[in-house]
Length: 262
View 1 (tube, one colour):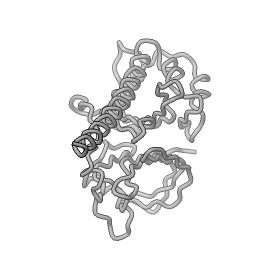
View 2 (cartoon, one colour):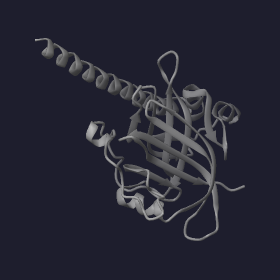
View 3 (tube, one colour):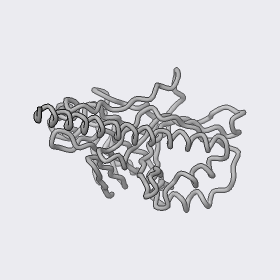
């Protein structure tokens, strides 16, 4: 009887932890969607000032305080719309990210979108229990075909967490890529799986400077980078890398590069 009681307690604790994580993740996604609704119903500027944390980071073109940037922007009828299609949160339920397609409508909701891309927003739970955006970055690409994919979450069972990831290349550049990695590059649609592997193997990272922060098995790094693609000429830009701790090592689950001109 005692053994059965112990098993029941362990199972209940595991289910409760999983339910709490899903509750936090759902709350994070709901906050993201409320952010997008505020942009449509009020203005893009008001929405960012409402949902960005006081110490948030945006890129103009390099990392700067988000609140200060949006305070200085003049009012505009232009609408930035977006929708999350992928979201994840750390084991503690207080640090996560959302990502998906964005569109820009220069004349507002009654016009037509003229620019397209993908965004990544990192969220941090605040002292009041609500999430605020602490980093926002994105890439641009052509107009996508078809409808927006439905929202998905990473697989969270133990089997997935213990996977070793993609096979590393001879130079070891992709050694830490997770098998669910998402690759973001200006002018390209999001890459995953073997396409992501090939893309990273074709790149040469020549210099990188930034900072990393980690909590509850999730880490994000951002900063400046020089990388070469089809030639040896370096391209300067910003990077964001998100990692999850799985199977005793860190695995990259999202890697973003956006070029900047100086």
